[in-house]
Image (cartoon, helix red, strand yellow):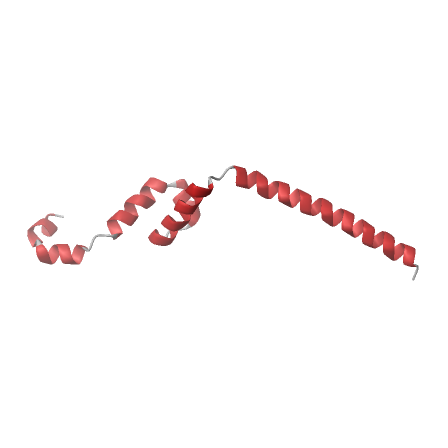
Length: 89
């Protein structure tokens, strides 16, 4: 096999790979620009705490926050302590 062909193939591969990697990096950075890292961290924590998918939390953060707060209540204990109040609901 001709070594010049191998060298040319390797050079072409590296050139194409480099171009592909640059395009992938550009696409990744394009997506990253749209996200606030602090907000994204909050969404990740909310998704973990609520059990909701991350995309759902991103799209409906107020509903996710409300769900998390409701899940903090011990409704069984509330019922035992004040069954009249619990019965009203």
